[in-house]
Image 1 (cartoon, rainbow, N blue to C red):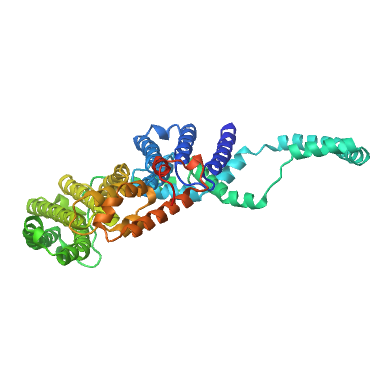
Image 2: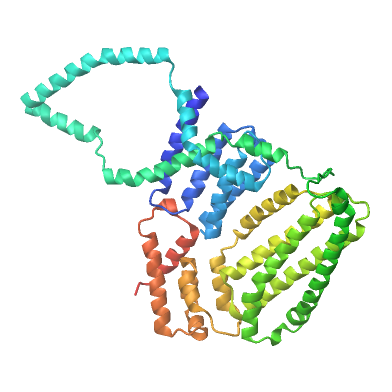
Length: 495
């Protein structure tokens, strides 16, 4: 009971801390402070779970993403922090889970189970019947003295002006005057805090279900006897399936070979001769279709190597064609990356172009895990496990870079053939790049379509947006990126 009571107190205290740190604030230093408290509370609540390697990795990811949020306060760092926190909740359960996707769903479900968690904690902390009887007896004994005290206080208050003054003074000092509007504004953050803390410290009803499903998903394949309901075994024998797969991978390799030869000729060798219109068509119309083709190719490998073909004794040719197919798709992914890079070199960096590079890195790793699946006879669960952790690791690694500043620096400093897209830098990139735009005003005048009046107007507008965003924020939302901007702008008088 003592542990349940302390757990309930921790949920309430953590919720109050959440309100104090995040009410009318943005993510910044408060994210790091709350994360440290939450990890300490989880250490007390789940000592066994914290010995697992996955939980230790996610604790590191939560703290690291919080530090990156304080450092450059990017949307990517904030996303990584929220995702790390949810994954930590999912992995902290007593029943072990392996898959990142399962842990994320379990973390979300556990947060939504907060009413049940609080009900269980309250039930465990309520005193027993004998204690209620004792408390009731003391309440009855105290009613008469309190009633007499109220009567005599009323008489003395109206009979003695000095007593009335003293009583009013004490009442003003000791009473609480609630501002109901303010209380309503704080109520929603309090509810969010309760959900977060109860999700962190509560045991999910779905953890056992998720663990049971995972136990039926081994990483290695086992040969199984197939059942045929509509056709006799001779029509769908393993040999026929092998021959059909051999024809399919042979045909697909031939088609992809022609596509890769074309890319070698027009993307790797003579891409510089493409016109701006051709360059735009290559990227905007071709890139996403090719990425979809690579994903479809990966799905084809998963489908054909889903079962007993992995154990067919004469499948050396099929495995060889599958390896060639994966290698050619890796070549295609590199060609897509090169197309994107040529486009960046011509038009500058942008968020979607960076997203293509990030996604292609995951695709290349996915192709490698598919190679291991075919070679080592692994299952779909193996792919989900490896690629889930790879996606999380890539998110954390990419969060190390302040891409708002990286995009601004590259677009201002790179020797791109066309004009600098100043509107994109002023309106779509966040205000973290404001001090760089002030430092590079001459470059903007030289390479963009804006004149001096347009640049100054855009700088004033962006500076005003920063001031409006930071106007009512306190030390809780402190981050280095905003502090650097404010330090630089303090040297420049407002227009």
